[in-house]
Length: 400
Length: 197
Image (cartoon, rainbow over all chains, first blue to last red; front, side):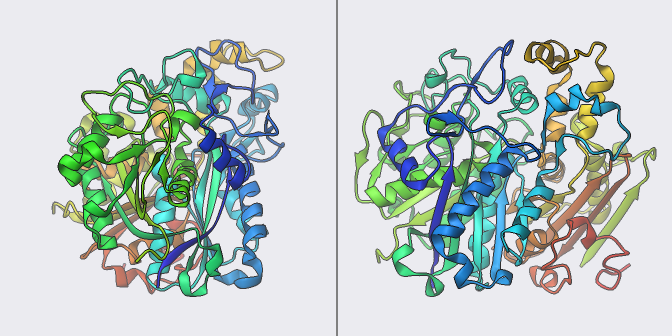
């Protein structure tokens, strides 16, 4: 029995279908620009990776959280494209989704002086969990709806639990992944005030994962959902890949910074390898978190070094964030597109905006053009504000 | 199975300084975090938890609207129609980094982990009883698991519950497939027959 990915749909800066997104990834075109979703006059920094359709940034309909809207669009595509509703009873469908902080339509909130209204009044403040749970009911998902919120690893933890559920014998169809958008007045400015934003004024090259000149990250937005099934219940021709290992740890070091020793990040990798019953030497490439922040790259390098030793110098790595920005609560789910691409095309994509190696993080970052090589196992790493670390191992299906 | 449940009323002081070891971090604490830190300290009663103990936590679908209300209260000039420049000059300056941390949904779980040195398997959920119990059931780590849930209400009331038990002990909980909020797992009125008093 294997835990297999049989569906994947995405709404992201790379595109609004899986094939469009593969195309954008392969073309390597930057998808970060100046924000168009709202007026940013007076903002000190305006770069973001926004979700576009036919070249236009998608506007948020009224009465819905922007990230919940993206999730709904991705879910509709997934349900339609997988025939999920004809193969599993509604009580056998589970949704495990990673997401971010609540959304407020700040313009409406101030225009209508909603902050002066009594507690409990109807306001332009949208509770994400309530909206996602309501959506699960509308999509006939009655087997459970669980929402994960560990910042940048929220969707990794959602995928991790989904994998464990099926591995441990729950015969269910699990819709998992994540959706997030911080491209709104309060969330964007709040993130800027945390000091994690890049300083380069050119949005297309602002986020430089692993590069010596990196100065910070850029926010992105979007949703991606995967369908996970037990292999014996799946339609074999739809299997995209197999998940074979998951590990998760906590730094318990600081609320703001990663543990510079990277011991717990390394431990998460070891736990995933043990779970998959794999030797480190079998990992063919690593899709890293790669935020573009100064502290992230050395921590990831040190973690890889602890697990892979000298091989770290020749182990190809990749980060999608140079192209899309950092999608926070949905980043793992959206970055799974890169993993599936590596397995499908047998190549590691180049990391956009990486040109100068950092002596403190001398990783083998693919640059310029894709690196072709036989790929059976991909390691996907993510870490978050607060110190959570996740490692997922994805395998090309039927390569034994 | 060891279980604790606490509820603090709106103006009730939470004795966090009697329990917090990392007092410098208390500035990051919401009332939910304070209640969680106190509850975990009481649950372990001076024992140091195993650093590898898995820890899963579900925050409540709470009222962060307070942050925005607070900002509204501090704004002295309000333009008739919202404008970006007005937001930057009048609202953004009131959003402190500290408040941003407090709105992050994983802050309580992270601070409880730091306070107790918990470095093992983990997960942070939002308002998800089922997900919390399944996370505990399916952890790959041997030994006991710590689960917790908290909920902060708009009026300042806070509820908090924690349980330390073996994965199999969580598998029989009646809320295992519930769509409800995780705090219900600990509320005596919702789970009276499940947990020891």
